[in-house]
Image (cartoon, rainbow, N blue to C red; front, side, top):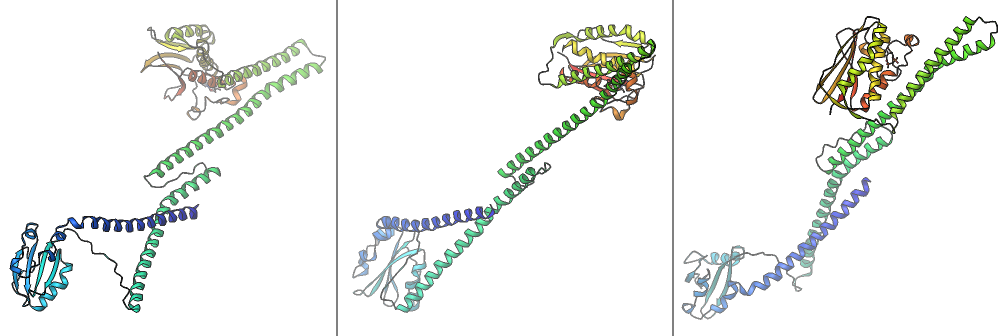
Length: 466
Ligand code: ADP
């Protein structure tokens, strides 16, 4: 890639420089053609010295020259300026022979146009002067009568100059093409290296070009894309790990009740001399284990249902205060029967939210069932509701044993329990809070465990009001 682009740039620059040379030659030709076109109209050509010359210089009519900003001088053979009209660039009445020779030879370099003519009859020089408007002295002169040696030397020097000019031009083209190519190649190479790293699986690869041109936009797009891929890959990894862990947890949690059922069923079949009490005890173990397995499978089904793309709520506009009061009322007999204290603080106003009442009720039932299962009798359970900034917050608290703060973040993950060994006692699957959180999120809200200084635990359900 490197060499190909450099070569391409060099070729492009050489073409540009060759076109520049051609253009310069054309420009000179055009200039000489155009100056030829306007030559006749220039004042210096309208009043040549030959047209003014008279045998007696006193008869010379210099009025046209003077009117056009020029001047006429006559210098006699003694180098005295005997006649002067208009513009005078000699500036003296009398010249020495050397001064006059210098005037004649150096007049080409001055910003004036001189037309000088000698009158053999009057033995004087007629000098017509006009200020030069613009002049470019560049001409190529050739005379075939010149000595061959001189011609070769002069031609050689000219050829050498042209070759040097072309060599310098080519060198500049080469340097310039390299500089231009590298300004493209360096960022391109960095972007290529970054892409290679991505292809090889290094999703942390980023490109830093320190530029502010289009490459910077490309760099930002690349870095953005890499960041997204990295994020997606980490999400995929995490969900893969979660899936593996879930399968492991399910098989682990199903194994115990299933082997219990199998073991006791085999015992029942093999043991012939069995008292009715023994038989009853075995059947009870089988029943309890099958209930546990059934509960686990039902909750798992519910959880995976909510993850499926076909899952949707059937929300209706509901007065949430009224609805929570009704659920709390239904909880009262059970709370009293189990020996729990309770306190409900639900406002009398009507606050509306879009609720799938069947599913939303599951959140409160799960929280209430947890509070009763994991806390000792006499624990006080409090339910309160408040509205702030179009958000409804329902707090469900107890002053029981609480949940360790280090588990607060993970407690909503499937199969996470504070004390695994108590699972068989409480019959908990570790899925209740996961299901409750998913229902809250499906309603556009959330379920959180609030950090609290007080004894016990406080869960908060958020739900947008309408
Ligand atoms: P489970 O079916 O085991 O109850 P959950 O997801 O509902 O599963 O609860 C997860 C764990 O959180 C429970 O095993 C329990 O250890 C703990 N927990 C939940 N609620 C409470 C509570 N109110 N007080 C103390 N611990 C709780």
